Amino acid sequence: METLYHQTNNTVREIEQCFQRLGHISPPEVLDVENTIQTKITQANANCDRLDVLLYKVPPSQRQSSKLRIDQLKYDLRHLQTSLQHAQERRQRRQQELSEREQLLNHRFSANSTAPTETCLQLDYELQHHTQMGNANRGVDDMIASGSGILESLISQRMTLSGAHKRIQAIGSTLGLSNHTMKLIERRLVEDKRIFLGGMVVTLFIIGLIIYFFMM
Image (cartoon, rainbow, N blue to C red; front, top):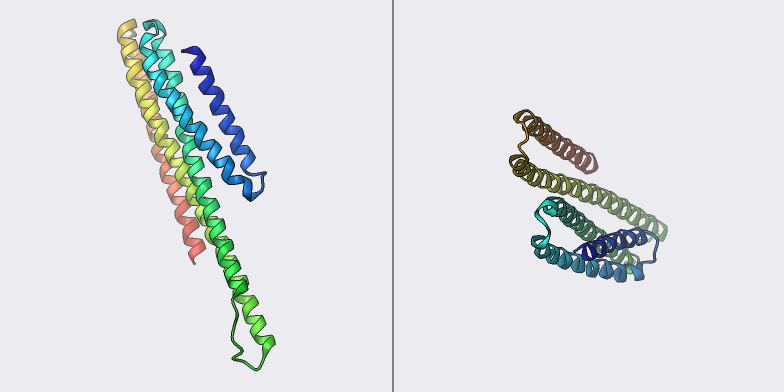
């Protein structure tokens, strides 16, 4: 089990390195790197499923710590999968914007005016306006995607904390932890929940402000 765990952990590190490459490669290579990332994520998820099966063969004294390590791998993989989806969406939006701009540049206008200079100036203005609107929309989309990623991370952390709470209660019952210690743990979980809700509200408020100012 340890060998498979370390192999999966190394795969996660390789995926993170691939994400770092995405910002420094040419557009034709981006699709290949994205496919490589998806393949590695699929492989790592399969390894996690295998680790869940092997977990029952671990001695009971080590099972809880092994379970926590596997859950951390799953959380990292979910976060990486979400990041990949956002990167693919941004790439598709950029490709669409470039295609629309190319079509606009190649569009032939009929000579319906006796002032060619005026027509050229109008075309330049429309092109500049289109570019600015595209940049603004892309900025808003990136902000929304980033906010969505943060919210998903907070939700995943909350699920992880809830699972850890249940496991701690089970361990506490086995080891005979005092009621005072259990109350401290529960109080910490309540505080984490409040922080989670507060962070969600602040994030949604910031996204709303960004959308409001960009759409004015």
